[in-house]
Image (cartoon, rainbow, N blue to C red; front, side):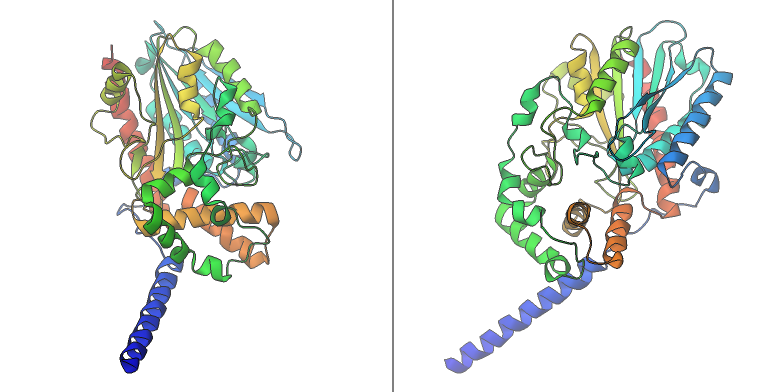
Length: 415
């Protein structure tokens, strides 16, 4: 009997060692496959590597629209900052030339660093997509760099560590929203001290996450992680204790521009969640059956992953839904469009994404053990939100323009 127990114990230890080794190798060497496309250098020209260069390129394309359209307004709104000067949100508005029926708003940089890709999409649309004959009854509002501080400083969050896409509402009761799942996982999601990417907890983060998934299930873990939380300013997805300045800025701009239109299509460009190379549609659930039917009609031909479907999550304080609250008498169609990077539909991709976000947040708040740790964390952040792959970047602009063409056609048919 003792001999049997000894053998069983050795076998168990061996299995644990194999599991840990497999988890370590697979997690720390994880690299999803790029889409099989030919690199297009013309499309790569729409990408820049600093907020300043993105803003300059956006403004240049916006001003060039004045040569092709009778009426174009290019303007900026200042963003106050304790650490930066000259931050702005930039706008390009092309009104409908005949009757003001529909307005399409396309926003970039709600999540700072994700604005690099959103800016490239906006630049390409201005250069290649919009034509005067398309805008007889439909206007366009392009919003560039909504979270300018995060964009410039290569973070998803504002200077106050607020996630802008968890901060928008017309009702301050938003900040009383509870996320008990986040509280239960606080220690895992908000580690303290200087970031050491070679620590045991970071090397074997996958093991810790798998344990939580086994206990709570992936949907519950995703909801706790990404819903938004309003208790811990040092934590990820912090929605704030009050409205950020961008809420007032966008309320003022939209109240003026959207006023004459009866139908609003609100598109917010993001990167990170989803399958690599795919452009996903991730709205919160829509309770109004008429609005949901119109949303499905506009995005006909594309899969919509509602927040209440399997392996997805609902979000508190979303920007695109806030626009509907601003204009309750209008038809306001909200859509978050997300370019996938790390195959988060898989367990390893979802856990890797969570780990990258947690590590970056720890480094931003508590510093880094070494420059190597800082560079490793930033490289992961870029891979998740602004992949350097030329194939990925080419594909992102190809699929977004294709989708925009179909969306535009469907929108014109909408009554």
